[in-house]
Length: 161
Image 1 (cartoon, rainbow, N blue to C red):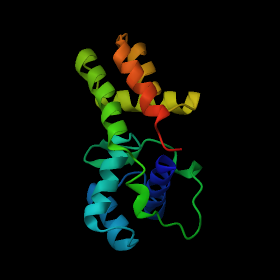
Image 2 (image 1 turned 180 degrees about the vertical axis):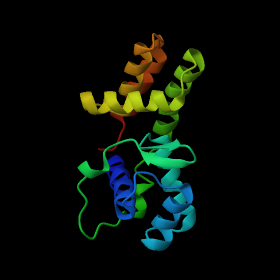
Image 3 (image 1 turned 135 degrees about the vertical axis):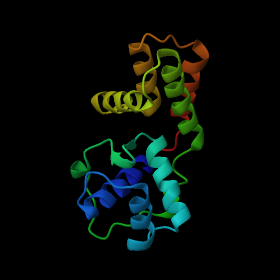
């Protein structure tokens, strides 16, 4: 649930503005002041989650969604709950970022490129973010030790559905 809730919030913020890109200020302002969903601090956290989760990326000083916002269904009176933050275990994000960072460091590719490849792989195969990241890592010819694979399995198995 967490992921789609996050995607839905992001999609709505961009759709309301009718823009492809927003500045970080616009994003935070929109989620806090315009929509009164969150405090500015929480809205900033939403932005950070969008970035670390790979749903948003930075582009020339602005942020853009990495997915097609028009495909997301949003109820008319949609308002994300505060639990949007609780549903994203930071552990998972850290693990995901760890794999991404490892690819970035060893293969010297842009983080953006890696994240977007992971997203594509995730959509294509309909799988969790960690195995998608591991598959992308192996696409880059990066071998992952047993420990990493076991960790990915346990992350997914212990995830709240």
